[in-house]
Image (cartoon, rainbow, N blue to C red; front, side, top):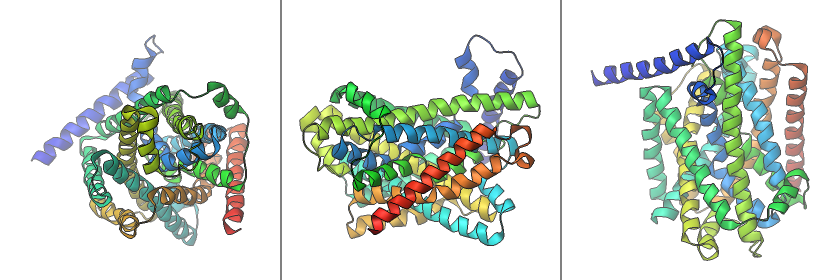
Length: 433
């Protein structure tokens, strides 16, 4: 009886959001644009969590500590890529009512689908490893509990957050968006405290450069930690049936609002990523601590350099990033399995299975930060298998109808795919060398 009442409340809350959105789409633009935008915000914020997960902490801290502000441009370019890719993903789900994995299942031969599913599951495991390790590390740094205990707390907290789905899409979107906001606030404080050299930051933002193979490896890690394969699959699913419209004008209006959602959410994620690297550059590289290569070292070193407040904000942002991204990663794993195989497993089972690699890493004593960085490199290798099909489908007029990509959009998307694949080939050459 209680579950039925909960479900009814969930549907009622979601219906209010949908009706409010439809009413806005059916009326001329008003003066209060923020109020009009609110019903459409949410999906991009959930997807953006993948862009501020603990893997970003590891790659950005190492990049800033070893090379100063040099790789800020990589973050900017990566986030611009992310905006276009996530826009295409959202459009695919919005226009067709099917997510990227479902289109792959329908358009590709069965053997190809199975291979892609296995690859994306491996990517999901690498993703969850980074997110789970980060949250466990956050509990360890803030509360002083062993990493194994932090891992168990992460598993419990993730299941509790996922339980919000019972109450509709709005509560989960609100909680995840609040978490993203909390991470941004923590890094706003960190940026104020570390007093970076803004002239150097500006120069590094607009002048691309590398300093040897290791900087390329870290750049690939930053790219893998920014443009996330599972977020591409997830965003297309988040738009399925959320707000269903039939008229062409309403569909185009809904798409424009979703672009605003993406720009705001990805812009916030870009700020957080840049702030991470800037903090490491201004705090560690500036003082000669270029050897800072782990999250734990960064956490311990912040207090004597910047005070206890910086240390606390850093730890809190890591914990919140780990919890939110682990929650979203579990949902993405469900979507990938359902889309490719037309089946799913209980969330509890998936959560327990995806916990095992992180627990194994903790058990055998591997360096958490190095493991996080390498997991992001794995994600970078998985990107073409998400980006290439996405571009193929969104440029197909049979699939997209009048919302098909414009030629310039397709050209930019193919350029991004080429850059990603080229960087991966170079990265593989360096690793084998």
